[in-house]
Amino acid sequence: MAHIMTQNNTKIQGKFYPLTPELAKKLREAKLTAAEWRFWAYLVEIDPYGDRYHDLNPLTIQAECEMSKPTYYRAKAKFQELEIFDFQEEKVSFRNLTGVSKMRLESRKFNSESQKRDSESQKRDSNSQKRENRRSKPSPDKASSTPKTLQTYSDFIKTLSEGERESFLNFANKKASELPKPPTLSSKWIEVHFEELRLHWQQQNSTNDPKISGTMSSANVPKFESWDASTHEGQYHTLMNLGLVKFCLNATSSAWYEWARAKHPERFIEVPD
Image (tube, rainbow, N blue to C red; front, side, top):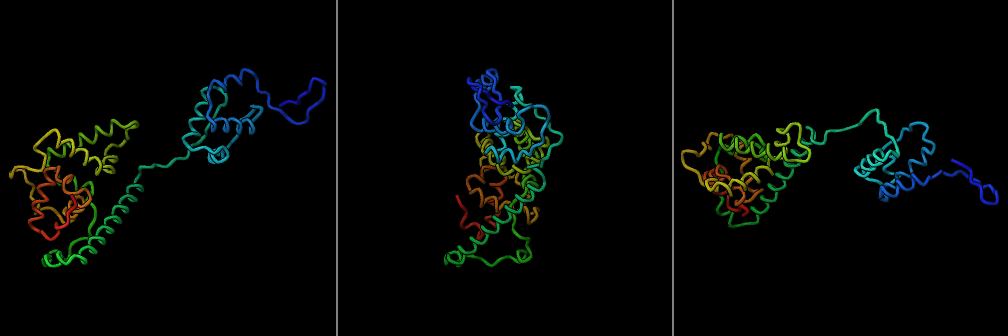
């Protein structure tokens, strides 16, 4: 910082930051964005001398400079690379965005959406005289059935044959490896995203293998009677969520639909396409 003298040796009051031609050229050639210029000016204001390190809160910087978090980190990297500023971080505060808490939150969200769909379905039932007339008396075993929940990853895996399970896992692991930042635990990533992965896997199989277009031999049909109630409910809610066409892209799902519709036709009167 320096005091400035005019040609008449008149002293201008105040302090000034010496912006050298070399630094001005470097900043101009760096093609800084508006946010990066604000960041640079803010840091110069805090540390005009460069004789020591200053501790600043990144959240404060982002607020003062009107920067998003990604822009803040990109600007830091640029200034470090240009050797305009040196950043030293003694500790890092972080949180796992794909941890167990997120999975639990998504599970609660799925359950809430399932209950909402059940409520809407019940309203349609009460307003449809046709359905009321065709509804059959529920079987005794339904009286103690478990609450409806969306199908879990574990339930989905149980519905696959050994060959289908191997095919799905190979497909899912390949998708995980193709991500810009592949997950450290691919199995956890697959569990969280299995609904989307399953849809893409079924579409791929229906294109590459005509055998997985909704039919399968009687020898390969799973014993659906041995499945537990939660697995059947998971299949039913997946059907209502995806629609009949997408659901039946998988041979096992298609076979289950035919079996369940024959056993409980009253539940499949209004299945979305």
